[in-house]
Image 1 (cartoon, protein in one colour):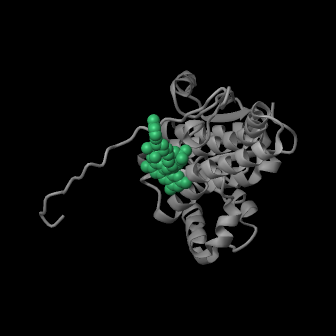
Image 2 (cartoon, rainbow, N blue to C red):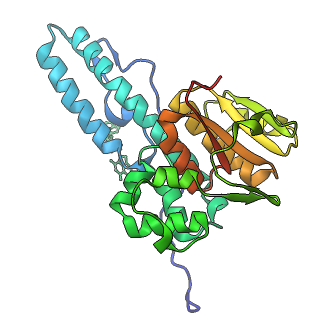
Image 3 (cartoon, rainbow, N blue to C red):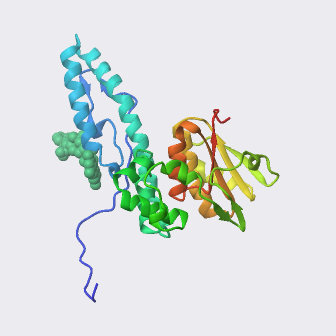
Length: 274
Ligand SMILES: Cc1cc2nc3c(=O)[nH]c(=O)nc-3n(C[C@H](O)[C@H](O)[C@H](O)COP(=O)(O)OP(=O)(O)OC[C@H]3O[C@@H](n4cnc5c(N)ncnc54)[C@H](O)[C@@H]3O)c2cc1C
């Protein structure tokens, strides 16, 4: 800057590795913290997990009759919470690793995308906690003034915004069911563990060029979040109108996906998608 040289230090660029172990104990050896599991540092929770492990291990050892059952109890108590956080951390990692793809977003909308990136922070809660920024982001999404954005019930409001794509205006971002059965729509069943990586790349490459891509799949929330992340790739890499189908109980995730520019339209199903 101002003609000065950049000053380097010994900072090294890390390639993060997620550690998962089939078992956290053997004989009289037990693992906790990063030795047992890691979670991408962008969610800032590795230390918390390690401390919670230590607390759980202490309780298990005091309560159990012997070490093998103490270690088994400790692992059974901690593993579900760790797996849940690793899922969130994985989504956050993918978001950061694909960050340059979102540089075109206005700053406030980028913040919406950032806060809801991993499925941990709810869109409505974010707008409630940071109303000025949240409403600015929603205004960017809708292409209107921030003063015209409501300060409550934003989920339905997000779904009610119109969209013009490829010269066609859709009155709401919640797609009409008829669109699923249109001749120009390709319905795709997404069965992927992640929206990035070799399996996802092959899946994306196999998709036909089509006017509308309708992504359906398991009703599971984790599967819906993968569909939304995949939709974001497709919105950027294809000319198709992309629709993500999800269950009504996850309507907050669908609204966050719309407001963050992850998908063009959503389809909210009362029943479980196929
Ligand atoms: C860049 C970065 C940013 C992070 N940011 C956050 C954050 O904001 N918030 C958060 O909660 N977490 C963050 N984390 C994760 C967090 O640092 C770890 O999850 C946490 O430190 C794990 O604690 P631990 O005790 O399991 O392991 P560690 O903290 O790694 O402790 C292991 C210790 O064992 C020592 N050791 C290793 N081998 C031996 C040996 N053979 N003999 C004796 N000693 C040994 C090591 O020197 C080390 O002191 C971040 C991690 C990184 C890399």
